[in-house]
Image (cartoon, rainbow, N blue to C red; front, side, top):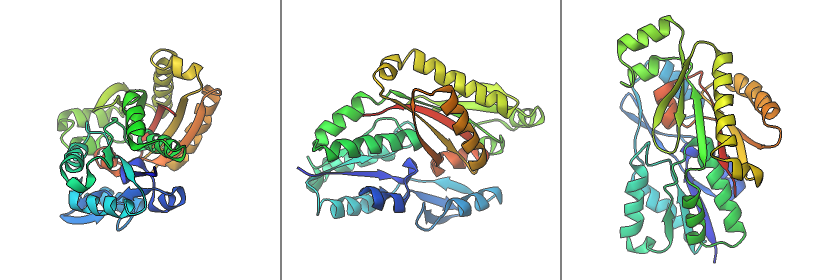
Length: 290
């Protein structure tokens, strides 16, 4: 039994990296001033932020199931089945749409397993690596599906937003709150605990934001995930939006703070999140590993 791993570009895995890993990545569509682009195919990170900062109308949308089905068809020419790991259903309806597609299209029944394990960006990427490891061990699609679903809530993401402009633009803050926040130089720290992007804390300095996120990870690791830590099954990673220099500095701080936990990735944050929070963001996450 040969099982393939397929994900989408919300995982932060590039097309180049996908080829090296032996997986497939569905490029997510991005609408900019009404024109359709595809992440990492017809739209680079640099181009995205240039458009975003230029006040273009930027939004993300669901991939066409027919296009995704064509990728699945191509993969199934070489594999018996595949596990598809998309972004969290709490952040997009894409997952539910493709679950229905896999369950109702006769050619995919029993061959395509669509995971809804509430992941995005670096935690989603960890799921891809976990799935790939299991597939290489000869695990079936159902076995991979079961493990990823069983462990779906064993991750946390904390995000410091560099500017309130895009939260205001997307309607997530009222203009008055955004104006006051900008005046006071407030940097909100947001969290993703499986489902939605929610507020976690408010700070005013980058150093305070880092401390807040580190303390949040420490709390998670010492309470919710203490068993996984004891078993050596927890990882830590960083994501950012056009903020690589700070991300590299933050990596060193996290390695110092958590010397006994494996550090995995420093990746650009998914464009599906980036269009809502803008450039300058810094995020850290912990996630279980297989």
